Image (cartoon, rainbow, N blue to C red):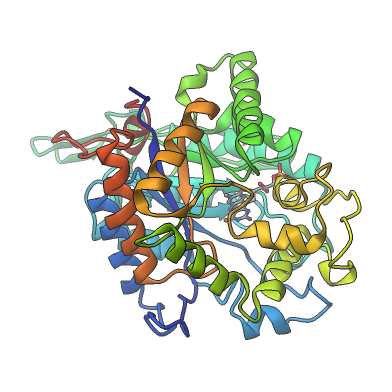
Length: 435
Ligand SMILES: Cc1cc2nc3c(=O)[nH]c(=O)nc-3n(C[C@H](O)[C@H](O)[C@H](O)COP(=O)(O)O)c2cc1C
């Protein structure tokens, strides 16, 4: 039998599919919409829900904010940290991952925030480590422009080292709660870190208790060689965009090779590939649904504006009926490469059409068809799981139901994904390492 694989969900705390026929109406700001979504994922035994974040309003597409605000693309979005707390307090098994940028938070603040969230979540919290990839994000934090990728990751290496020391500044048994001596914390078990690096300086110790996981589960999404190296050395789980099975396999093999070279057990790292199933009762209906959305007005602009935003490249400048020139970006290089599919000869228009399926064939169909296709893909790639997200930018309750009550049961019938979390409470990091 095929080895089982893991499931996670990728979302942002933003507007739902507000004007679609089945819609919650575009007011998710209380968080309730996403709490309900997370509960559906917990019933389907997902490993984690991951909340994406960026820290700016873009005008990368055509030099105007219009597309982004008009279509509510990449925003408006709420802060992932309070939503993570809300989801955690309304679930019991599901992992909750929030994106927090090393560029935005002073290390002490991030360490304390993650520790508090992990305590609230009973050891189910994960930190998606990002360095931010947009000039405007940098400009919102007092810089004139985004530092080059190499510098961002060099800083991130040191940053992670620092926050790990802060999380270890409380020994596991520092809280004694000894009534007889009126002692809550044994002060001898809490230590300043006196960290002095090239970029950061911090005295420590942390001023909150050690959380159930000690440190949060680390999630990362490095795409460039430098980003992959960082992910391979640091992450417990990696989320990746790769176009097609060959690219997925290459990515995972490369990560595992880098991890082993860095002295890690590659099995400690679970790689999740982004996937966007389109489901219906019959294949023809699923295809029709796909075409309905992919040919809808605005799909082209929304897709180009999204890719412009994460790459800081203005895609309005290119002809739709020609191949894209080779380019590099100081932003999301991996996402650019997955989108551009250089070497395939595809025109920009074809690349936009591929975007909805992220270049993976066989994922438009019935739950049973898509489930067996995902099984095949995992078998070829070698593991470890999929990061599901909605194909058309926004999410609806309907889509969540189709995945959690259609696709997942089909996967379970094939023995491909978890049917229960088991009775033992588990830390997120342990849950990921179950298989
Ligand atoms: C599935 C996925 C999710 C990502 N989520 C975020 C995010 O929430 N915030 C962010 O700033 N970057 C996000 N990124 C970008 C990565 O952090 C990373 O910068 C990107 O993959 C490019 O890799 P590189 O930094 O090595 O060039 C995401 C990337 C992928 C593939």
